[in-house]
Structure formats: C-alpha cells, structure tokens
Image 1 (cartoon, each protein chain N blue to C red):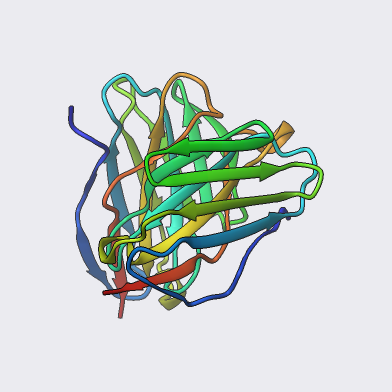
Image 2 (cartoon, rainbow over the protein chains, first blue to last red; image 1 turned 135 degrees about the horizontal axis):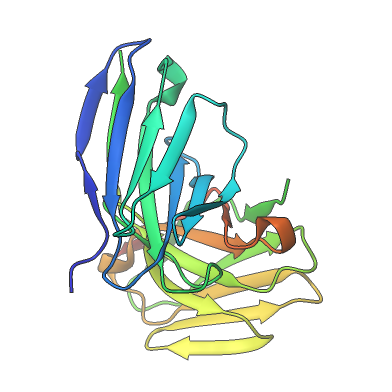
Length: 113
Length: 113
C-alpha cells in the first residue's frame, strides 16, 4: 500500500508569496495532521483534520490555513510568506481515531528567498 | 505548552553495543508515547509506540515507560551503523489537544563500525 504522499517535494518562493502544499493520506486513514520542522528541531504541530473537520490548531499565525477534502486528502496554505517559514513541512495520517500512531510523508521542503 | 525533553546527544556507540535514548515530558496525564527515527534529510519514521507502564519489545528495540517519573526511553540492542539517525520522542496531547504530537528536539545517534 502507498504511504502518505506529499507534493511538491521541494519549493522555492520569495517573501510575500503564497504557497499550497498537498497531502494524500494512507488509504483508509481519515485523520491528517500538518507539522513544521525547522533544522535542528523536532516537528511542531500546525493543524489536525479528522473527517474533514478541523480538530486542532497549533500556535501559528492566521497566514496558515488548511482544509481536508471528501477523499481525506488535505492542503496546507501559507500566505504572505516570511523568511522564517523556510522549513520542512510534514503531513501525517492516522487511522480512524485521532489519537493513534501517525505516519509521516516525505515532506515538502520550502525555501523562502 | 507541553514540553518534551530529550538527552542532548550526540550519542556515539560502537557496533553491537546497546544505545539508550531518554525522554522526559511535562504533562503527567499524557497517555500515548512514540519513538520516531529520522535519517538526515528524510521524514520521521515510526518505530515504537507505548501506552502502558513497563517495557515493550519489538525486535532489537525496547521502549520503556514510567508514567510516575514522566519518563520514556528507547533501547536499541546490537546497534548497527544503519541505526545512525536522529531519534525523536513524541508525546500525544490530551483533552483539547488530543491527537496532536509534541516532539522533543531529538537525539542524534551514531553507531561506528
């Protein structure tokens, strides 16, 4: 079975632009979470969606938004990009419950120039 | 803000030795604990989950949990050079933060031949 897939793999943007990152969960998984990982740190929680509803939001500004589609795939949108948004953005999926082990995709590496 | 602390490392062990990785957490009511392995430039890979006090073994890996001491550890027996990676401890939130993972900064492990 395919794991969590994310696109694009790499992205280079300039300050002020916006970006959309995409994620497809493992087949049968209904929960999708987004994390940001900067170099040398552990991943930091951004959003969680379960059954297309937002179930949690981390300490990120309103420039960050997300949604989950009927097929359980998800998008993360970031507006007005800042240099500090440069990071690895990870999507994780888990089965039906929202407190089950989460499996990560390969991530999208976002660089802001 | 829930805190997850890991021994700073880096940790270096010879091939065949036991590697011991430690993690403490601040929320006494936490219920779910995970260890992820992250190779350089890659995404985190789930290797162990533990929910009850005591030991849980899976191949060369043993996770140990002591909720009274708010301590979780990972032992890697017969360490191999392929185990060289950063190991992330993650604790699941509860209540209003149920389902989100809080990560430590990771411990970098090097296994030398």
